[in-house]
Image (cartoon, rainbow over all chains, first blue to last red):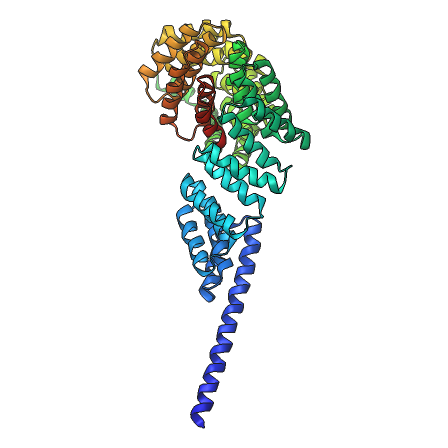
Amino acid sequence: MRLKAVVLALCLFLLFSAGAAEEAGQHFYDLGSKLYSVRNYSEALDLFNLSLYYDSENADAWVHKGDAQKALRDYNSSLLSYEQAISLDDGKASAWTGLSDAYSARKDYSNASVAAEELLLIDSRNKAYWLRSGIMLQMQGNFSGAESRLDQALALDPNYKDALYRKALSQMAANNSDRALELLDKIVALDGKYKLAYNARGQALEMQGRYEGAIRAYDRALEIDPKWGLALNNKMQALMAAGQQKEAVDLLLRL
Amino acid sequence: MIQGNMQEGKGWPELKMVILLSGLLLMASVCSAEETSYFDWKGLKEFAAKNYSDSLTYYDMAIAQDPSYLDAWVHKGDSLRALKDYNSSIENYLQALKRKDDSTAALSGLIEAYAALNDYEMASEAAGRLTEIEPARKDYWLKEGNMLQMLGRYDQALARYDRALEIDYRYKDALYRKGLSLLALGNNSGALELFEKVIALDPAYKLAYNAKGLALQALGRDMEADEAYEAAQKVDLQWSQPRINQMHALMKLGRSDEAMKIAASI
């Protein structure tokens, strides 16, 4: 009888302690998330570590720890954190997203692509996952493979600007600048402020040897973002190609 | 004789007093000058520690004590420039020049401040004054040339670079800038020659590889341009300019997939 009472008391104590630890873990996790949202990554990381000290089974805390490490450019550690989250819950999309981003930041597009494919297994109705998969393939130079992924994204949302833009890049890679221009025109009709589309229009026009048109397209991009180095550099190239070398060097000196 | 000396000795106390007073006056001026330079030195220490606002306090103290102390005006101008208060920095350099119109330090600061305000006309004028004062300084000719380039006066800039190269024919920065002038003026072969010379002198001079690529593209030699851009990236992996330029060279070569691989990653 006495033994039963002792065991019961011990169980209650353990239950209470576990509950308290979980509560403490959640408390530090919440605090860490708040600091993360205001970009105080170092202190957020400390709090996520504290949260995991109390509750190492919290997959969200591992993901957020990985996010903080990634923000601090400690990509190798962030990969380990995301993998830890995945080991706890392999259907955790935020962990696969983080993993894909961290590999991408390390320019390891092959592994980033593998992680992106996992996201599609989790939710194939998510257009952003199809886009991500397409981008990762483009980063590896697989433009035709990317196009089928981007088409899937566009099947879910035909006005998905980012997918249209990436599809245009695939078309340009296949030397189909006319089709690329159609897609880019569609983007600027949807969103007149989409600077990447104007910039890519410039590139497509350059491919066709239409340098004056390309210069105008780069100018449109620069109207949106006057200090955008990519568009400035591209404009300089178009000016050189158009034989306006003085204007090109004027620009080069200001890059 | 002794009596005479005694009579002369009557004037000693007054003379001593005068000497003493002169000595005190001299000491006071020396101390004051020392204090002025001390404040200026303190300001420079703060400047070196990048405490620009604090340095201003010391320069103001130096100037308040001795408004003719040239260095404090120049240094104050430098601190204001570091704080991006370009108009005020120009005022201080001009104050220095009011006290010594051939102060090269003030003129150098003035050029930088005007350039920061994109007022290359004034910057060029100040740079012209520098070369007048010290024509033996190659860096002054380079500076004047650079300001003229920013005004788009590439032919005038050429003459300045030539003066710099007369002083030092291996002066890489002048060779590079002269190359840019030639490129702007459409002399692509001449520009290419100069960029190659810079690279021979310094294989780590990344700007020259990039510019060599541009000259080669202008000559229609896109394959070689691609190689030049590749070489620039070997010097600096993070530098985006040669990557973007390489993308254009590849586009011209019809290697669209390679070009777009770069475009996709930028």
